[in-house]
Image 1 (cartoon, rainbow, N blue to C red):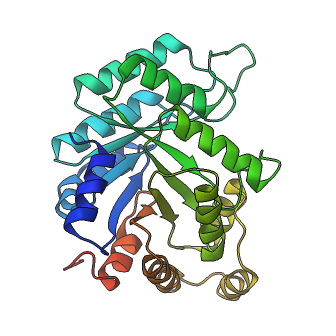
Image 2 (cartoon, rainbow, N blue to C red):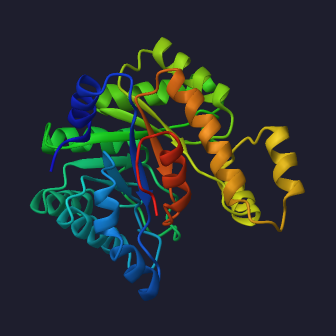
Length: 295
């Protein structure tokens, strides 16, 4: 399996000015949803995303093993995989064993995250921050893994300021991170400001913006609240007026408008949060001319 940072470099050389795209999935929680996602892996591979992300399921049913299983299966279908790995409340030996299993299955890309606090105070680990995990991976595995970290255009909820947040991002890059994938946002100006400030702080790795097409009002409100996202008043008012309606078409067109602006301003690629349903993301990509024959 290729390292994603190397794939990005090759893509930009071969396709100057054309963005790549990547898709994010989470381990399904039911037998039915597992069958549905696993059954689409050939179709997803045929779309040729530069990679897919698989989020960490440590707090969910089946634990991190569900994440690993989806990663191994996706790799069998020819997909380059970025596996999320959280470190808070997890001991060093468990993280090392997980990364050794990744090696054994040819997984070479890790999204290094802090993760949520352990559910029990009795659970403790040796890492408190994502930078600790980045440093650990580099220390134990050298350059074997491409390491991605998260970026927050609207500032991490626990950071005191944008400057402090970017200081932490720079520390992660200095520890060995190869690229940044951002949290989703709905105001491109927040991303452009983040990108400019990151550069001024010395962050020189690729920064890939995260896009989440709106599909329903209820899920939109729930997810943006959890993420602490700032929604522009015009978009919030428009969505509120459409509450109870099917928002897929509106969500696609909003994402298309955002993506065209991002691409015009030189982003290297687009990362889509699919919520395990890539239909809206693919419609966006089709309108952008990045995929064809979307069914």
